[in-house]
Image (cartoon, rainbow, N blue to C red; front, side, top):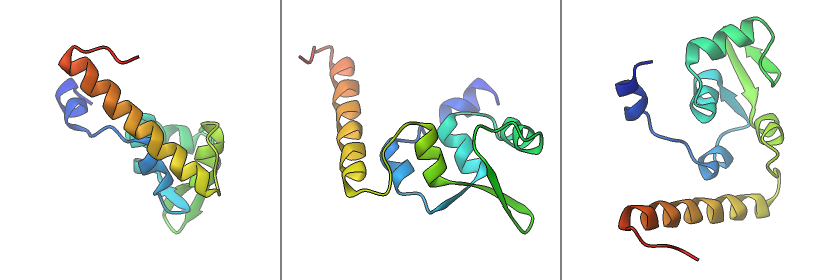
Length: 105
């Protein structure tokens, strides 16, 4: 992927990860890990992804709960969603502070 294409790709947030269905397709998993889809497919074919894949028909998926566990994030709990939203707000506030040149204590 070229630098220009990478710059256009939207960064995914933890809150968006919690909004994923039970099975996440490999391209979406690649977006969350910021890994090229070709690399994701190659690792899956070699059985080297850090998460087990599930094949349904011709498509491969990973379990969202497995992704959360791999990232050491809580799952199956309403507090997990609240924690993700709080992290997202903190990230936005931190980014805004950096852009404005202010310091946040």
